[in-house]
Length: 274
Ligand code: HPA
Image (cartoon, rainbow, N blue to C red):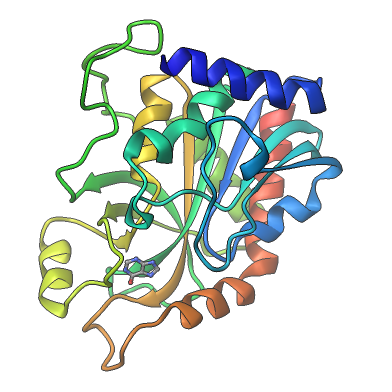
């Protein structure tokens, strides 16, 4: 059933783009401009792909962009699906299954996140070294299809060490102060309370957001290597004495545009040279 749905989406994409992408990019809130750097782009809106839903959140374009980026053939999601929009996690993670079926082996996930670690400031970029699923949800709940992955996937290196090393190296070359830490997934759509943020600090979280973890779980199930980068768009609730809003999140991502683009493009170049 799921395999049938994947095949239908793959057939539609291959009709429009015949090369095989090796790297997949999921671009979070305000970070979709990376897809505008793709050369000879083929753009496919989500609503024209079988079994893809429509994306509803502000700041997301809602299309796949396929083409060349720094020497690699890539497939980018300009906008992703979130659990808080009301989609099931099977829907949220469907594009990752499709990327795998198209031949993608490396997945680069990005997001805007609240800073939980008080040494961070808005505008920092954070290499995701690990995550905490704080939701009691999991996209793999249900019967397992062994053709897609194992029943009990290992998550001890959810974020690939080699890719992390590349990101650190590249950041040093660019003289970019790349922070590191643990990303916590909450479902949203509410931002957290100050008490919840204290709890996340206590359990080892450095940043918090409403995405990424479902896609990473499915990517690991599918055997893909993952690199994750968060843009710290605001300090999480209670750290500063000010309310949070989505506009602030988008404004900050616009400010880090240059360093974010430089980091990701240099990482891709290094992956291509391996
Ligand atoms: N909390 C949850 N998700 C977020 C935040 C936050 O503070 N900022 C951006 N996404």
